[in-house]
Image: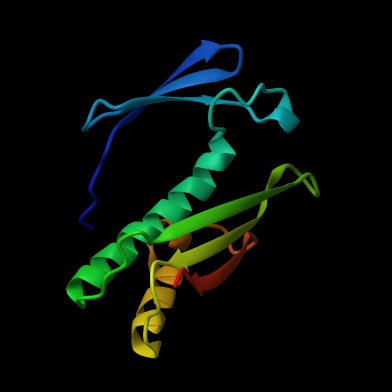
Length: 140
C-alpha cells in the first residue's frame, strides 16, 4: 500500500476555537463551534469544513478531468448546504451541492463531471448514511 502522509496540526486555543496549521505549506486558519452547538460562529466549524472539503475536492478533481479533456470550467461555482441532525446522535445528515458550470457542456462533458462527485477522495471517504444531493446548472 502506497500511502501519502500529510501532517496537520491542531491547537486548542480555548473558547471553542482551534488554530489549524497545514504542515506542508504552513498556512493557518481557525475553527469555532457552530452557533447551534455552543459556539459563536466566529470561524468556520469542523462540520462546515467537511462540506467545504467535499466541494473543493469535487471542484479540484473536475479541474483535473477538464484539463485532461480540454474542457473549460474556469469559474465553476459550488454552493454547499449542510444539514445537521441530532437523531439518533449529532451528525451531518445531508449535504446539498449546487454546482454551476460557467457555460453549457455537451452530454459527454457533463457526464465526465458528474462522475467526479462519486469518485473524489473526500466523497468516497464519507459514510453511506450521509445523504448527498447534487444539482447541476449552467451560468450561460
